[in-house]
Length: 168
Image (cartoon, rainbow, N blue to C red; front, top):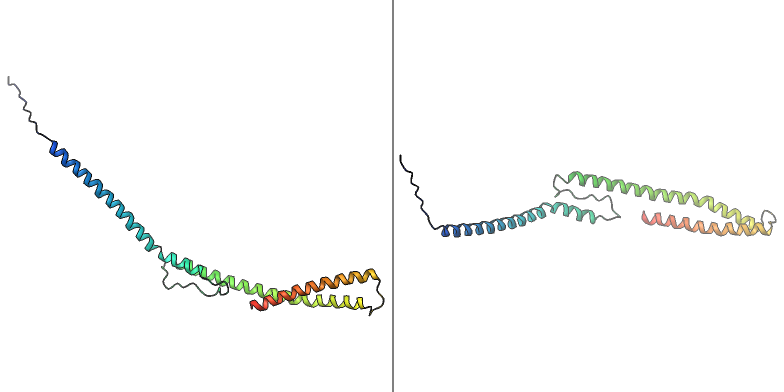
């Protein structure tokens, strides 16, 4: 029967352990630098990518409330934002039309109210002057109140007409 012999050879692995430790440190440093540079590049790309949105926001902020029909420029706008710019321009046109209708209605209402109010004021003045006969003192007091309130309403209506003329 043959005996088995086992041969063992030992070698010092301290140099290998040191090299592996240096390699590990090198890989950690390279990985950290790669992550930091990736974050920087991504931040720059996001900033560059969002410039059109920032430009659009500045355009919207600069809209003059007196000139809502001036469209938001879409020449430098990316195609992804064009539907938004188009809807905003349509909205501005509808708002301007609504404001124009409101100004016209205000002028018309003020004009329509002024005529009957002037008539009421005139009738009250005629009655107070006694041109239609004698008027009891209690009625004269009420006519004076009607006249005073009519003056206030006529002033308010004239102010509305002035405002609608100024806006026009």
